Image (cartoon, rainbow, N blue to C red; front, side, top):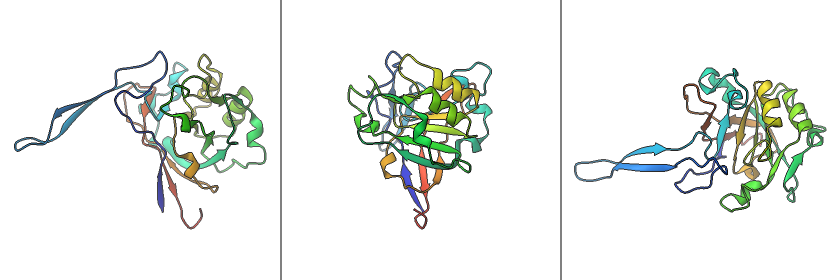
Length: 214
């Protein structure tokens, strides 16, 4: 068994969603010393870094993270690798052609956009789910979808979020390290904090890979 970290590091000063930059601070309340220990406090928004969105994010009345059972954040996943030259714009349903999703809980899309993490380009334009792709995923009885981009939608859009939320899917955004995933299915863990009434939470997303079957 091998664990693959699929998460960006959360650090003060890191880039966030344009116009939604919440204070991001890691306060050191105390440091190591003869009569002290390290103690820290965290201040940040719920959509910072690699995070998971519940259906409540875009649709009122849908469940938030604390109302979803923990098994909704784990399951059998596959990674679909898109061409290296994939640029900004809608991804079409043709990327699913020939793929059997019957026993799959999560589909992760590796676009290569994570390579722009930390650059001004990352949050300008990116690949997103076209409506036909979002509807195909929503119709596949998945628990969720994940991307290595800032959002399922373009900056001013919401169609893919609405479609996936209506199917009670969660979505994981700003994934990292997808290029290390195997072609075979694997176990995905993306466990959020159990925040009361919250629509999102940062996660430490991890792939659990069976070395024998990789």
